[in-house]
Image 1 (cartoon, rainbow, N blue to C red):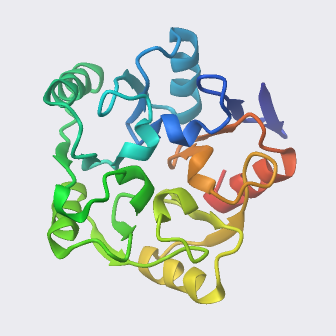
Image 2 (image 1 turned 90 degrees about the vertical axis):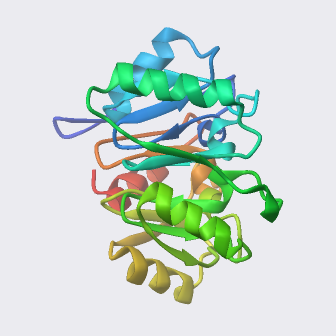
Image 3 (image 1 turned 180 degrees about the horizontal axis):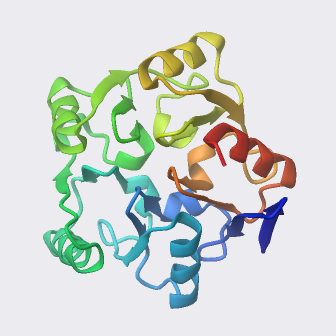
Length: 238
């Protein structure tokens, strides 16, 4: 399904494994989108077109829950500590093959925090990350070094799983509709970007669970309404 505003093609809406929660199963940056191995070539091509990136099919920690277990930006990727060496090697190999000249750092979360879902607990663009407030300083240093970002701790909508409570690109942020005024002001301050509140999938406030976005495009879960798509486009500058 294609949406149009004036003459400009906007975005399609998607499902993965029959689920509209595409942010649980995929993760994207300005150059790449990571998708589960069994995703069809057709869907992968549509995701590439939507986000203007190259698609890489991989498992993470031997599961398809890539969006929960991985987070990345133009500088690197951070994965669950349970990610297999073979999976990391495959991602490195495919990245080199798909995007000429792209070099990204890859790290695992340290196991000491007992929080393994990198995509759930880290919200990042290419310059800043907001993370779960209880992460150790060791983990913060790994995030800072791998993603090349300034790191801050906080909540969104009272949730510590900030990676699912919002989506941040290099152009804007869409956050949980219950985010407080203080939380929104903090996001605006640290990212130095406009911040809006909204929902996905017909009222779901966990933005990161059903939205993939970068500065070039976005893909939303298929249950996302026209009004929600409009809010996404406004917040992220499309």
